[in-house]
Image (cartoon, rainbow, N blue to C red; front, side):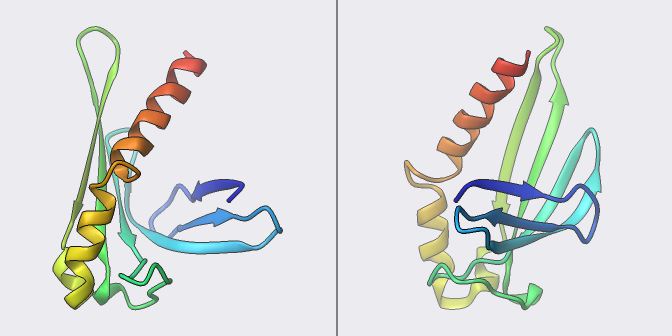
Length: 116
């Protein structure tokens, strides 16, 4: 993967640009409410393949809350794993693992601090 892209509007694509020039879809923006939050469908199934049916996808909500010291609190909630069916617990375990959302938020923090 070269970079991850989230298009900033409801209905926007969430995808990664691969080093070979191809795109790999993994979600869709469901709600876009800057600067407070956005919600996206997690369109990856338990076999780590793209799932086009939104009814079979979990959701990820990311909230941005200003803090009194001028910083921003970022909260991430991944929910509705049961929509994935029998593979929902596998996905929950994977995104909650050391290489899951926690690591991604750490990378986000480091990048935000570079920009500051």
